[in-house]
Image (tube, rainbow, N blue to C red; front, side):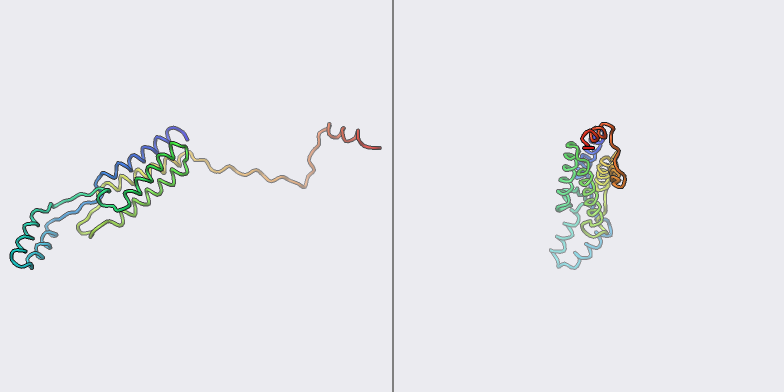
Length: 178
């Protein structure tokens, strides 16, 4: 595999691995969510209601989650596939690097579509997009310059006799009895 393709696949794997520490999801406790929780705390009796309202004031209004924090097993799958693509590129196995890149892209898309929590308060951040870009770099770099399979040789034509050299014909005539 040419050196530039190897470097591009390794760079794509590094982008995927780095994306695991970037924000993937954000939980926003905006005014609507705080009001909904506040209405629920109003139903609690006396001291419990006051305690719940005090805890509500301590909650941050915005929390960002990395892939390590939000994903259960997807983060490990992304790490393993990115490392597999990196090592495959270093060993010259373009096909394995491409498969690992497709696995990273698929895992990322699944995690983007199946986000945790209710969609009203959980939003998608830029981390999964970075992982998807790294996966596309892995797949693209491993497929650039990939040649099509060579065309098979034409089957032999057995209907025509093969031409003989004159030396073979002379040798055959010298052993003839007549």
